[in-house]
Amino acid sequence: MTSARAREIVARIVASPVDALRRDNPDLGEIASLGPDAVDAVAEAMNGTETRDHHPHQVVEALTHVLSEVAKADPGALLARLDAAEPNATVYVSALGSAKPDPAVIAALGRMVTSEDATIRYAAANALVALHTPEAAAALVPALSDAYGPVQFVAVQAIRDDDVFRVPDAVPPLRRIVADSRVKRMAPEIWEQARQALEEME
Image (cartoon, rainbow, N blue to C red; front, side, top):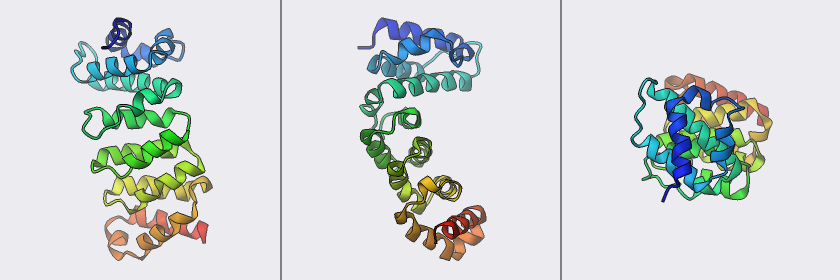
């Protein structure tokens, strides 16, 4: 059962989402410390919040920021909710990009980057890039073979731009991209970035 305190803080954040994004907002530190209760309260708000005078995207941005703070303090509170059937799974996955890159977080994102849901895969790929470790780079490799262009683009761009992501296992899928005339024709940005990334690695 969600605590009354967590609901109270989330209600204030929903009422004033811009304030929630301020670094000096004391509510952020307190709700991050509430772990699972914070996640439950945010989920309730996301699944049926009265946005009142605020544009819905402002409320979602503020609540996502709360989850990022939770991820920093207690990633387990989010890991416990990672299920593709969970309506807020994409937001939870995104928030984990702010967590400490420990093995449990990277393993979970590695699973999510091969989810059947393209939006979850995209969020997981971006979260792995944000974690910025060799282990995250290894978990990102499957995204290079993703059929959904935006997911593939995230992985290719990370490898082209940052040597942390230039792990040996990335070479075979990069070669396949560069050898694929259909990718060159239909997704020239991905093809060109893959070519450049491969050039950096070989």
